Length: 211
Image 1 (cartoon, helix red, strand yellow):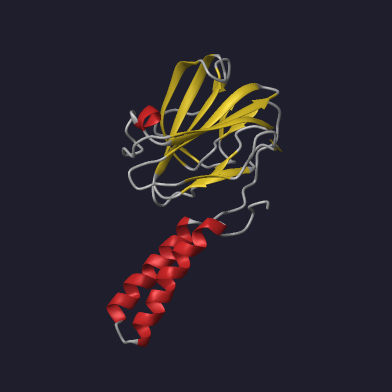
Image 2 (cartoon, one colour; image 1 turned 120 degrees about the vertical axis):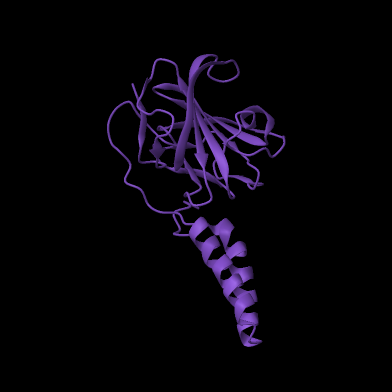
């Protein structure tokens, strides 16, 4: 499955149930309730949208793994996969952002690690190491990268579409996070970062770093 459908398959249960309840309410002439359920169904349809993106071409480009707003850019030591200095870019996704995650670079998925945790608000800095999260380690010609899917106060499900050993192009879809959340990307420390806190980015389209 290439996951290029206009609405992510994981969303149809959330779309169909309130739509059926809305239909039932209208049949019973419960108009206000019908409008509420219909509005919820339309919101879920909007939330699980999966738009096509024009992926930038060029050598050494790193694109955003998610839509949202850059919360911070920090230099850290990443001992597990990058094994050295890395730049961590945290992106906050609100309820109105596209919640599809994408490959920041062309590369091979070398490891996937799920970590249990809590459900702090995604904009809380402690969410990076306390919340439930999924790490996707990627090896590319520019070095090693990590995309971290992190739950939030409302987000309770991390969906990963890729498997270890899979080779994907820059901008290809990795998975999604259900409802408000945070996505982090860890990139090699010698990269030239192109974004700053407060910047809005679009997954697969916005260039966040260059080599």
